[in-house]
Length: 109
Image (cartoon, rainbow, N blue to C red):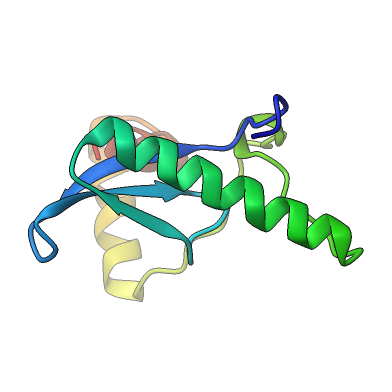
């Protein structure tokens, strides 16, 4: 496994499979099932390392790690006009900008 592995991994339980599943955000099509969370993490890291090595050997581009990306803090969201109106009114009543209201609501997740 490359020592430069800085990808974003997650291990979760799969009720459907009855095992833990290891996932990698940068490679959403890859997964690894295992009996323990530790084995699922080791497995998905090996699969990612193999895929990265294969991509590099074929001269193809490799996704960069999410942690290394720079984010502007801006993104556009399209909503129905009725929701836009309701949120604008809610922001005005709270004495904040629509941007601030949306940011607070998104952070509450």
